[in-house]
Length: 406
Image 1 (cartoon, rainbow, N blue to C red):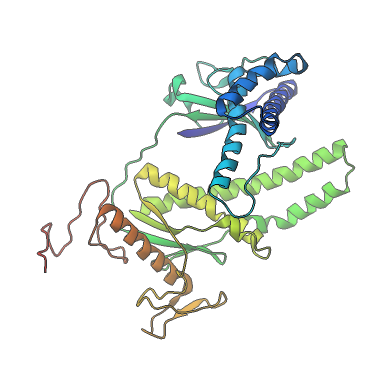
Image 2: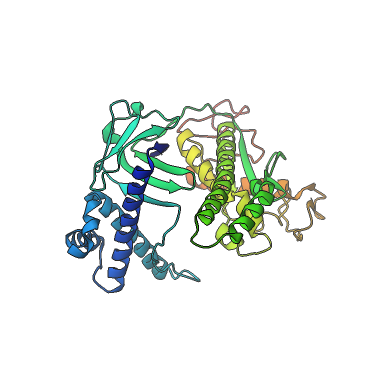
């Protein structure tokens, strides 16, 4: 699946109608959550049927203005939160189980249409909403060209409201496949705060710290917001300026990790990363802001996305003892977090702490890959060939012949 984002250009009256559609979608979702709490809904089909009940209720006549498939899409959102709660309870997840909550009014909100309720123009540059709200026609602004795909490939259209306007997300049924030549390189990545990551060859990428760079500006805008009167127009303007500043930071961070992940995938035939539990790590209030600013999990998502497109395995290994074990002899060398150099007393191996961890991550990933694929001749140095896509690269010593068993 591909998701293309394009900005909607319209009038203030049209934006107001989109807001009504967004509020109606939120009402449908919250109503289904309430009906589930009251025992009226016990399955996904019951949630679908309850959408019809809401539309036929004279008290909520305005709910029928939202497209029927859009109401079903919000019913799916509600039931997904309920199913997630059930899964967490069944798996006995520690802590909060994620009990479904009601959605409140928020700037970042959306309404989702399936295959009806909207219409694209022939030149794919205009989007018209045809449901009961009659928001009209919007011009699409963006660098994506929808002419490459058939209208039947567009499965859903989601309208997203942000601080700087309204956007349309097109969900396209298409599998991305890119051609890539084998490079004969594998790499392990150890993410950190001093450097964004250190790979198994010792290369370090600096942490850009986008939030820290704009923190002074954000604090200034936050102080201006706190001085305004609640409910006033000046407060709405101040909140919008603050939201735009945060949105700029988020976009720059996401663009940077996206391009970096694509570069890593294009340069290697296998990428090893740590399976970090970022949600638990941000509970440390001393490091939560820096960890969130580093966007480790977002980087992992882009790695896995490009890995599927380019056919490059991205293997996540457990981070246990990757920093403590020696990558040369395997012995455990206890170090505190402030110790940045690995010095092994057993084999006298000296290396940067993060580089040592990256090598251990790559070794663990190669073991997993060998157990999965059945590969026997692999080396953590990244110099030997890697079997991908059913192709075999013979080693120089055997010239494609199998070694006799000893």
